[in-house]
Length: 312
Length: 278
Image (tube, rainbow over all chains, first blue to last red; front, side, top):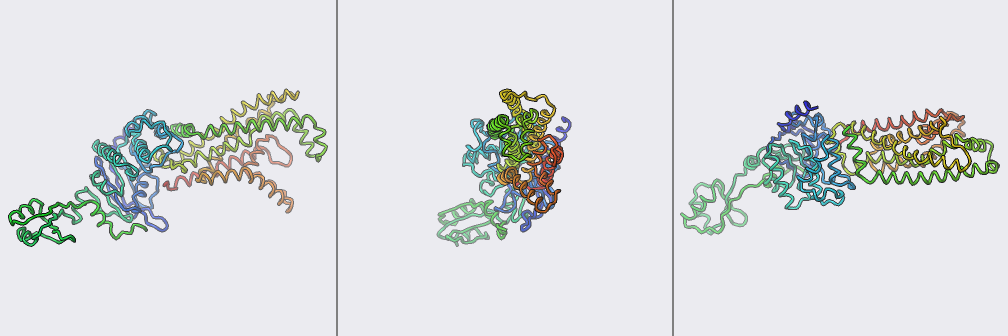
């Protein structure tokens, strides 16, 4: 038994999730269609896609809850079903409402701990971790949506897993709760764990994720570090400037790409705001507005997923 | 073993088990009281009772008045509702997982779904046996008191009585397994419960009537035996513990019950193994 655990521990230290050629075809729909990507340990990876893109189905296939039509998914080189101690390798938060309504939060965790061969004391530690100790003996039906999410995270953390998979964990959390979760996930990733978070909230992902995997209509659209994905999509930064004498300013900048935005401002590419400001001073042109416009994930996401039907 | 502990904890941490135990216990007391009242009149005026009956009914009546049959009859009081509650608990332990969406959590902790179902069957069977033990612990002294008050020596030490008690226990365990089997086959809580209840109550009577009518109409005597495939009738056959003329042997009833539990459980398990959990 000990030998077994140690061996598993070694394998999962790596904690890399590899999805290869994964597909799930229903009668009418190809929910997931030949998806391949890799999730690295020690980083938070955002799993993005419009509603109906196949995010949840993919996560459930990784966790052996849905059987794939084709392809494989492994965690640390092992299929989920073959993990000797699954809860000590992988924690998952899938639905906010997955507990018996008449059971207390603490008993819900104790049931899971018993099935995973973990001591009942882990239930109390996990409750403490997510700040639910005051509500430990309250029944699940009395929990708010935010508390249910916290209980879900507590359940996932019972086995102190190296890999954490969360499906839309921000749903139902208030801004304070979202901030708490972001800090927790970044801390856990800092400890070397693999964190995979699906979401459709892009602004949130930009703050949280190191890497992103973007899918649409069951297929991979983009994958990589957030900055690369944003930069690689032809979305270099631009500078927006408003001036009464645009021609004079353009002449002073010499050879910079420009376009006019709808409200009459200039949008310049290939320069920094400092360069534009300096040039305006030299040319003696008044500047009424000068803004660096960073491309954001949302823009990239919308560009990348445009044309892919959300409803199939 | 850890799965059995987890399943036991699942039952213990909700209200279901004591509500069911309370219901079964209340109905046990009621059933015993009715049986006692019934027997009181049978013993009091056997001749009068028999007068309005056909000879066959009168013979059955006087056979029941024998101490051994009487003791067996009284100590297995409450069986009808007890078996029903055990079956319902079996159904609920499975369908709750889908009703409350805890199947996801359960199968994440244990990807080997067959083991989960086996653990549920073990815990359900134990619950059935415990309910039987409690029931019997009540009916044995109550029967002794009742029969003594009727000036009849209770035949509690008689092998036939002991066999009736043991077969009653087997019925409690098997009905729990049938409940688990129905639960894994029909995941919907409402669907499974209604199907089982209809089968247990109305279905039993309906099958009896249909089979009897057809047998008389077509004059196919073998057709009468079809009714023993009905689990509730098979259960009656088994717990009667005696070989009555015109009926299959009591162990046939046990075989039918085991077959029901196995077939529903097996098909349900095969489906559960491959079915997507969402």
